[in-house]
Length: 596
Image (cartoon, rainbow, N blue to C red; front, side, top):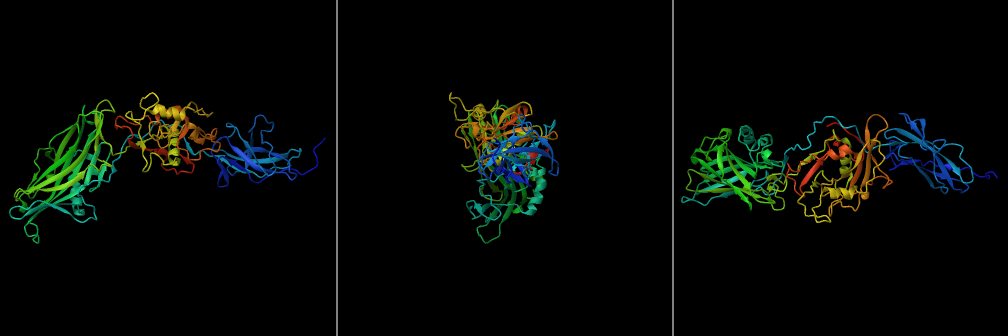
């Protein structure tokens, strides 16, 4: 008995390709080679119906040019959906190895109903393209990226003492009056533009400067890195000798420009020897001394609050390294008259200790009768920040050492040598909640001094976190050779999805965004694509972590140069992460690698 008389089914006009079923310029942009195609189908008789899906390659104008075999079991190379109720959406999925990223495609459908009637024509075409989130080439053989090079960053001090901001009212501290009613006062102000011009040459001439790169930084601001601090905000010290009559003009005035330095030695190679040490300097440059004062003495009074330290007494020297005494006579000014006071602290403790510093300067004048005025130059930071406080330890590295823990270093992934891993890290960093490792949200190192323990009572380490995220990983059938499970945030951070009690903790890596690196259809490039075996629609970008099939060599080397011993990274130390080859990219838009 033949098919009954009735109406032929019809393909709809709601053709879509995904995931994630989004269009760019009228073309469906798909994030995985396992493409999902769909369209609606209707039958006027109410019969169930299916759709046959035919896929073609397109030319640069989007016109179909060549049919693609998307089903080896079909004589026609087409895919047929299951029967669905009239008015419903019919769907098929193309196998992983049938379509190529970066190639233009179009598809169309034709309907068939359960009564045996078929559509006599094809639907309209719908164009689609598999667009990786990021594209990149094979690893470069050479690279100019230095993953560990650090640039000094400006720091805002939480406790600058009585150093005054540009808009603050001038404030003085004064000595007790002498027998004649005279007082010696000191005010701390910002240097004027004229002072700055005069001081530029002075700073450059200071051969004995503990931190030579300070000469390249703007005057009046503070900068630091992991081992050095350049404190230029101490500014101008105005020493004023006043008579008993406060309405009288000053009897004499002296002006000095004051700067401070801190240098921590993290290891032997940095000059620290076999002991944990750090040094401090004060640089005093006279700008003007009235002859009425006969001379000025400065006494640097640093305080080192430490349980297990020994500190030398301040010693004055000339800017060229000769011995001096902290005294200046009228007429001495500028770089030739600058003096430097230096102290060295040696830490002899065990474990770790953060050491607070305070600074004061006493001043006297030769004409005064034992009058001393004190200027408060603040401290290494309030308890909540301690941004300039050295931290010494014997935990990290082969010998004890010290660093400035308030500086969060930046690790630059070498995206020239490891472009696939760098693409994965960049994509996750841009899309993960909190964007760990960027902006004001650093990552935090998982150190061997962590208090978190595994089931055996041993310190939790990166292998524990990696097992949590990658333990359930199954290799995707990618076409780029050996791959490993790479994870973001990295297993050696508190931000890892595997770290217990961390901000992104998961019970399994299946909860992470799933990605893989694969070849593009044309040329020699590669792309980062969605892996849809777990999350069929691809990442939602609300996942607290990511894991990806990344070429084994890149996975193992991209982050292994983090110099934790040299930076003396201890548990929960902050650091930032950048991917130079992708810094021009914007989240939400497909991007291509650039050589950095």
